[in-house]
Image 1 (tube, one colour):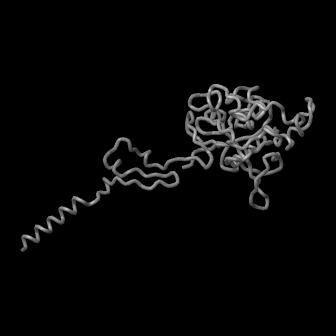
Image 2: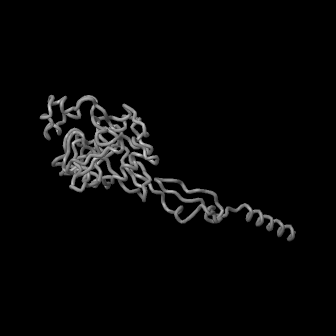
Image 3: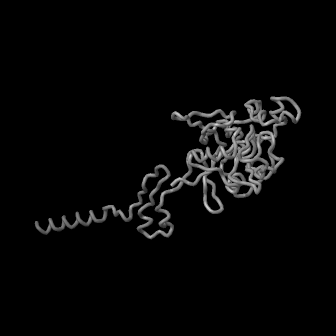
Length: 282
């Protein structure tokens, strides 16, 4: 009887040791949540060469409606659409600022979302401040070009061959003339900052509405729609904007290569807009 009990006990212990879960060899993976991950324990325990200390770090990601772009030295995020603005109310809170009004005298921050008409009538200095208030910054020229040209260094966001109508550019008449008549004398600073200019037909479009005007990385409207201020300064102290706008997107270079250097960073009119860049979130 004693012999049978010892045999039964030995069998139970042997069976338990064979079926117990070894934490070091578990193939379970932690749940992915909000851009974070944990490697399978078996990779590290079994000396998998593909698992390193870098794999144990959190994944990085971009804020909402921003796209990750691989850079020459480091990856970065860029707004997927040209930016709108929110006015910060002095008494508290904020409200959308009209896309067709200059932001002079206002405190605004950058916001980005699809289906919105982006902010026109904004200067380079105002655009820079608006990005900073949202924890972002104006893009450098190299960042902007990387987002527009992609890995193949295309001339246009969509490729090397120009496609008429792919982007919002090439409007046959200038809206200043439509609003104020013919002649060069109508191109005054006041007229060029009138809301009338972007409320004419076939002028400013909602972000992303030109579906073919999309870069390799999924960034919209880098060619046409609005000029985009970047974080750059000429030797004479002027600012720089890129990409062209809904009338002209080729006088100062084709597609991604369009570059205007004629205006101070305090300048704005119906054609000037912006988008922001940022570092990756931890």
